[in-house]
Image (cartoon, rainbow, N blue to C red; front, side, top):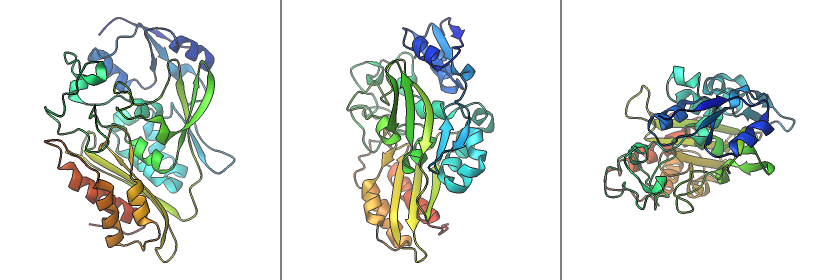
Length: 329
């Protein structure tokens, strides 16, 4: 780990100015950043401490009935917030399942969305893989048990965020501020596939700061669920996660649906095919199973991660049914 200084800006414009310089990195909870520093993946001269900047650590209801979550809000606060638990259950549950209680009390919403891939080739300081500017991704011909089965190539990392699939399912947006001013993006468009640029996971520009996540008011009759499968029940990243939203009436006729998978692709993977299969159907185990089948139809597993396909199918089916109020074994 290199030597660095920690700088605390007085406000957001000052933070943006500092982050626009060379060899500066943003510091929020610092959970992922500390790992990257120890692994010599990043070597900034200065860490810009965002925790001293106000107005980024609150959860508030806006005038349209939606919710605004500051980027510095802790995951534990998201998991415990009454409004999120009642109206955006999948978001609260995704935060509650992330890491350990100790990490959730430190890790932030912004940090969870912006964390770098956990691929062991990327994280190894002696491996110059495609994501670090090298000329190849080692996963297809190497150890690929935890890599992408959807949307992969030329890099096959998976996006590690617990929160992202649930927030994408709720059509959340992010507010960014940078040298060019403020801009708002749909979260679904914020993440980027490796075929566009294998060295990046999102479209955050140099000097930009993610300051807020905005979730619109849920549709009447909407209910959600978040599920994930892990190798161990204690601290672990998911092998597969699924966030599902179902909008149905009293007869269980599905008016609308959203299905987003995590840990299966380089971005939170929204299945438009599954959503189309669910709309207009009567919510039951058969409809949920059809949605699961079409959601994984495009899957292209590597040599050692084909096991993710049946797990993902099972979680899609269960998440859809649970969102519709039907419990499964």
